[in-house]
Length: 73
Image (cartoon, rainbow, N blue to C red; front, side):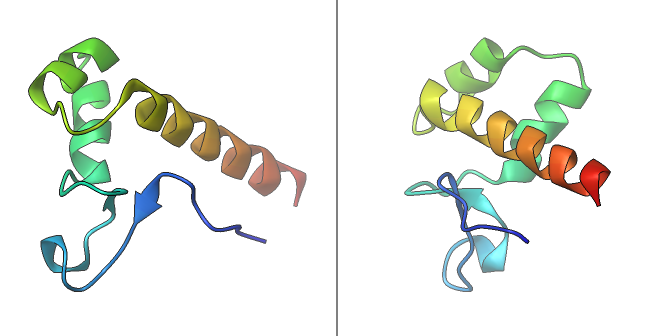
């Protein structure tokens, strides 16, 4: 069962309903694109200062928890 995210927000009124970091307009997809391209979290945070390190790490932790739940099913 999915629990409510502490770091992700989805609203039709913000970025057309794309998943963003809470209280920002920065899409989660942008963060994952940075990581897939081999960029560091620090590089991402430098480019998007409205996202905090705690939010970025929190997202990774939530993703890890979801993977763990999916594997257990």
